[in-house]
Image 1 (cartoon, one colour):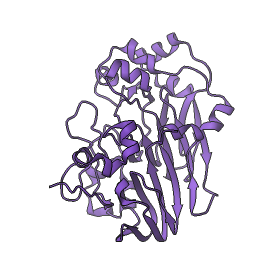
Image 2 (cartoon, rainbow, N blue to C red; image 1 turned 60 degrees about the horizontal axis):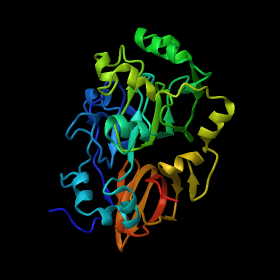
Image 3 (cartoon, one colour; image 1 turned 180 degrees about the vertical axis):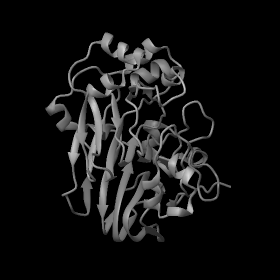
Image 4 (cartoon, helix red, strand yellow; image 1 turned 30 degrees about the horizontal axis):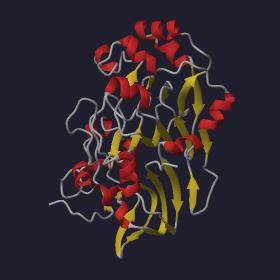
Amino acid sequence: MISSVPRPVVLPANQPRQFYRGGSAIAELRGVGDDRDSDDRDWGPEDWVASTTTRFGQQEAGLSRLPDGSLLRDAVRAAPQEWLGAEHVADFGDSTALLVKLLDAGQRLPVHCHPSDAFAQQHLGSRFGKTEAWIVVGTSGANPVVYLGFREDVAPEAVAHWVRTQDSSALLGSLNEIPVRAGDTVHVPAGTPHAIGAGVFIVELQQPTDFSVTLEWQGFLADAESAFLGMDRETALRTVNRSGFGDSALASLVKHTAEQSGPRVPLLAEEAAEFFLADRLHGSVELEPSFGVLVVLDGSGRLTAQGESLGLRRGQTVVVPHSAGAPALDGDLTVVHCRPPKKP
């Protein structure tokens, strides 16, 4: 039976199989090391945390389970105001309006983009598109980079030609290449062509869908049909923002927070706030009432809510319901706190 009074809970790993390699950084963070089968590490590059979202076209893959084996999605649907709060339910119904992932790119991801809310409503029957943001929590290799937006305006005919001929060099070469290190954050508006380079480990926040238009599918996906979300290529390519991203645009999307300290460090670009919120928390901090996700990056401590205490340690992920009130973190902890948007 699903409890009507949800409490903060540590979640088990949730790594639906993906088409690309990675996952060793997730295993290391979680402290499972060689206890896991190597194939799982190689093909578990994403851990979907507190997910009420399924993989595109799937019935259950991607959904998080609570420790008792029940689906978090079902628990939220059974008690939305307790999990999400009355104001959130008034705005978003029983949707958490948030998907959080740990993503460890063991290889470069393909160039792809995501639909906007308006496009998703018109063509995919969804209230949400897929704006996302990356919080870099680790890197490996000599040149950890991400790719974000075209450097210059690109004609629709050029994009269509690159996709039709699968010209990976032209696609990747047209994008801004951005070196990253732990503490950097990148906001990725819907429509922006992008890719994540090998060796980049992130906490990813996104709108709660699995919509990707894969521009560079050859060598990654089985065929072109799976690249366009069931749409024809011409329609799918309407999702692409072909505008050039100059220095000022990139500066508004990329933040460098590694040198910032204090109990609470806001992590994301200002324009991300209408989609999701994220802070890096250190030591003793009180959280405001909200549905949220905690990713413990380092240390150990406790989360106390409504008189009950939950022990925390590095590598754990926690879902926090609105009914927890104003929980308090204590101890030698570094935590990423992810939350859905607030309507102004």
